[in-house]
Length: 295
Image 1 (cartoon, rainbow, N blue to C red):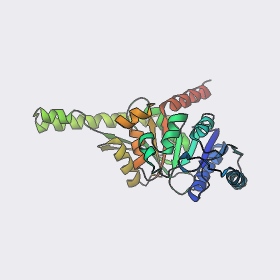
Image 2 (cartoon, helix red, strand yellow):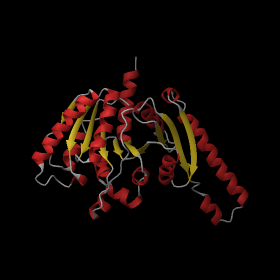
Image 3 (cartoon, rainbow, N blue to C red):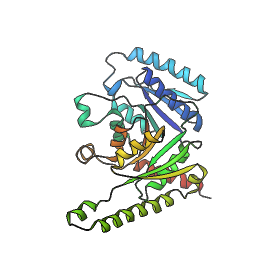
Image 4 (cartoon, helix red, strand yellow):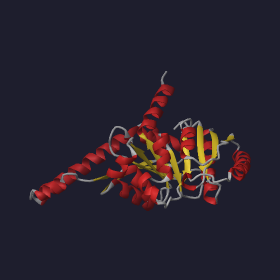
């Protein structure tokens, strides 16, 4: 993943500062520009704290620049509005934000702050929950759905942290198994159908792990059974993966609310860091990568 600029959104709390440290470590690894922007929790508005926020943000910029040896730019807008953060995010390759939950009733309908920013900006959003380590991530779990779009997602995860161990994970559900049981099909046929689904999943996992970028990393794969979002969160905890990478198709907030989103549900259930990559941003990154590799 060619990261040239990163936007870190912080509320200047202890957790917000850890978010900035994570963003700074990624910027140092990629030689990227880091932009720091102040926003209170849940983009609730600064409520007259603009002067104090600007002063605190400026001091944090100096501290981070000296500690990591990177270029840091302060975003002067301290109004704490989602629209301002989304506008700034559109000019960046990665957005980093804390994972503190918004417990207001409005969040039930509109989504958590990270979800709103992801939907508004359509840029990759890294939601941080763990204490940041300057050495980067040690193990990355990539949730894949076996479609063609999953292959560039694997490439992106491998390039995101080249020193990390990579695990590809897919959870399948035998979609027609319930119909077969309802039709009183024999258990032998249902077992054969289940094994066929698992065999197809294994073949596609081998295909996903074939690219050269995947081979350069230490890549393993595993397959689960059940709800993909829940199983991905469980697998992240089971394998101690400190980062979960998931792709997200572009849908409206209403569609996500009514029908659910695997990426957003995995984000809510995960207890570690999560990188959510919109498919539009993934296609853009793939195009830039192909152009860079062209003779």
